[in-house]
Length: 481
Length: 95
Image (cartoon, rainbow over the protein chains, first blue to last red):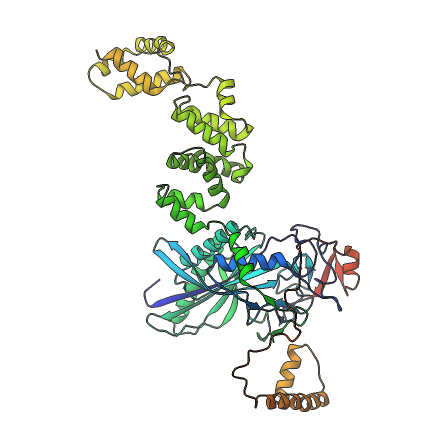
């Protein structure tokens, strides 16, 4: 990117709330059911039905608003957004127009370029639409099949200010939003399953110009990397147009993952004239201080705060704090171990090393493995107390991971206890000295490295169980007097 | 004021097909309604909070409980066309 243009990006993020029932009816929100199994007269939009708002949806939206540092509306209402599309059985979507549930927020994000505050314009509630399966590609299909299971699943739409200047910032913002929603436990935030969806408005303007350039709206970016790649492509495309003296057309473009480019969706929709008007079937929402306060109490420590605390209070490096707080369950697990164990950095090394490696290999979440926080604490203490060596601990840990046993039992049953008894080691050390005259000579000639070789031989002989510090000392005593 | 073009635009948004006679008639009728609404603008409403809802009710909420959905055959009973348990809609993109 040359310095001629400044990129301006704003994101609209849809987050499916993980309630049990839909926003306006009692149908289940369960994902993966047979098509149209979770439908009823209300979400099918049959005449004469009336929507009734799910309280938990409002609770969750208040939590989201508070977590994004928004003002929560004392008075909020729903509106009809009118358009014709087969995924919308009523031909209008119940959404919020001029009185959204939350406004004027901001969150802090961090990229390699530093810290940035990104404004959150608004958070509003709406119902999701159904799912279309086109017979062939959308432009050539003769018809589309419609599954209304998703119709009426509660969504919050989080609209950012046009505060982002690079695709990397957009990715960081989206990541931060996802983490916040996960910490709040109000959404599954699964981009592949569509419970987190992101549209982006992108424009370029000459550096120094205040007025925004003409923007394109990007849709269909179904993963974090797609968001970044789609934006990077779009920035480049617009830059080339402007360099050639051409104009950017204001339009919706879709990201095509297989072609690695954005494609114009011209002609997909008619003019954007949604004719919003207040939804007459729903009464207004009034959120008083008590309700707000109640929801405020439900908000746990959020990822950014936790990240900063891990650094300032626990003395963890930024990288460790980032990895551990990047996944809510990992952070919770970490803190549970810490209630029984007081060396955060040592614990962090184990979590980021062996634990994450095994979790990734097995495709498991932190609490799905055989390792419980209390057992991990026990194992680390056994290392610290020289009951097992660090090397043996890796074996023990893997067994804990697969069997769910506690480390004491494993060490006992497998005879993995560290040998810290001099008498027991005496014969082995003597044997190694006798078998390795060259190394012994090197040690006696002052080549300190040769000691390491001999220690290694003893460790091998004892299958890792000898206390390496003790072996080292014994060798020195025997060879250097 | 409203002219025929506005009526054609609104009819298009609502997917309504109007003949010439209807367009003339609705232009006049909608015009009258708008004239009446214009009259309301004569009132000074600077200190009046916009009304979003006229019934004095608020916060009608239900618990987050799953209720039985319709059997799928019933959900699909009125579908003009269906396939594999899904509603079938005609093609979306215009040529």
